Length: 434
Image 1: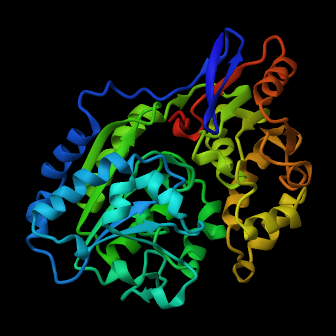
Image 2: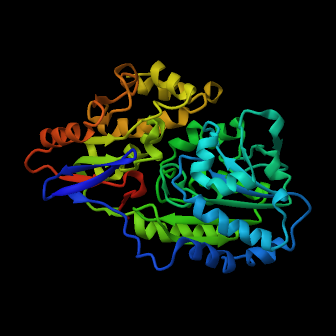
Image 3: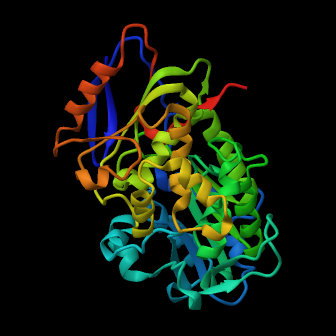
């Protein structure tokens, strides 16, 4: 049977065995245009007064709107005009509004990305600032301590704002259970030292730090506690279907609105696995998620509940921007083929290095299926980079990813093998049956 997958900005169509199990999200049909969904959410929030009423009680200072960076496919060009109109209708001038990009540990956005994400009108008429986790002058320490008992440093412009609005996308997340909500603040606006704890070895070694789990998930607990310390006056999160269209919007109080969104996404995008498969084939989500191998790791880790121990896992992504940041690339090269040694080293908190968390998550896949059974296909990386990935890497010439994958499927899936397929990559995240 023919099945279509996302890969970069294109699609890949593969001919799969008729007995393959295809896991996809199951969102309801869209009944309203995105602007109407956003407007309705802002006017009927969860656990909070409507946005315009809340703004009447704001403190002196800027209204800061926190947005995600280019790695999230959020249609801000549609969302922001509705949000901004409501803010201005509450008497807030444009010169008092700041759009703050929650880059977390990612690189700063480019001007072209700002235009792509927000549209020319927003870029031209509003102040847009990128968070910089390594700029000490732009950070401030919060009073009190986080869930883990540690101090936290966040973006000062956010902390000192007169009214703080966070936005994001709620989807399954392979560390924090679900994205969105509190993650806009931590790690989105956090310092490197704060993220060191949030993404430290012990947190990620906890089996509850996985897709679909919030209760007792250390990543969720830490992130939520930091967001509460900093303060969030209003939140707006969207849910996207497999066509990247807004299917739901949830606004209101930080925890209540995010919880409602997570309940919805859990029902639609976290299928339970009865019997793990012999072979799993997964996309890494397509553009913009799969532009680096760093982000592609989410695809191969998210599908792990669907593959049996010692099974075969095949993932693919565009990697159009390479392996990832320089620190991450250095880690991958240093420990290429030595992932077990890497885990031993990072157990010592004194040895923490930025981006080590992503390789630690990849090690979950390596531990379950083995480095000889973890395959990755891309046409975006050359042989030297592919050698650093600690898996079986397959280089495809430009435009031949489909052919390489089809041949791999034909050669890998034997008679009687169970094949599980994830065309959406990590946007559909299986969970073990309770």
